[in-house]
Image (cartoon, helix red, strand yellow):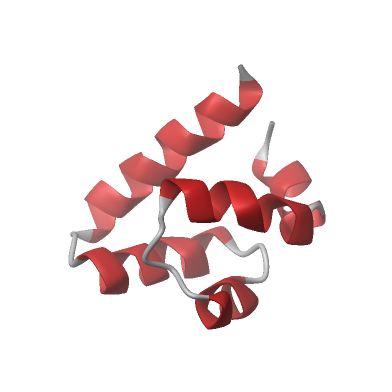
Length: 67
């Protein structure tokens, strides 16, 4: 699944995002609204990780959706 598909189905993807990153709030998911950079930024904030680490997490998560 590519990011355009994730963004297009963002409301349906919220549950999967929450499974992966449980610290994200409903407000976080509303702000992200399918934007990859916003998701990475929120992961950085909530988990206290570097941008590169958050990007790797998102990339790995995207791959799990494709399999």
